[in-house]
Image (spheres, rainbow, N blue to C red):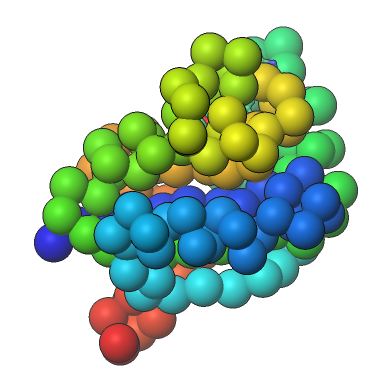
Length: 139
Ligand code: GDP
């Protein structure tokens, strides 16, 4: 079993798709280990995406991630990191495969409904950024 980290982004929460996305993830075999709805501050959103600081879309991305509530998720299944990336689909929904979450729910390359860690090391860092070890191990 492997854990990964996901965020249901503000666009999907605002459009009432959070429940459908959770159902999609459970249908794909993920167990919800920890979950919290919150609103990200500038420093938390900026720190989370610090790896993209030099990219032209960084400020826009951080502003988007702060615009409304998000759902933070710790998810578990076999091969969780790779499987979540497959279930999410490509960053740009125009390139996402049929049936993927981004194909179904994303508005644009930026407002793309869901985040998922891109590697096991990133998943460990991102899980620890938002959840305590007690939250990650209690259920
Ligand atoms: P991901 O791993 O598929 O989420 O993609 P990246 O790590 O490359 O980018 C992080 C997030 O930045 C994406 O999920 C989008 O919300 C946003 N993003 C990525 N590329 C672009 C872009 O070219 N323009 C804009 N406006 N946002 C982008």
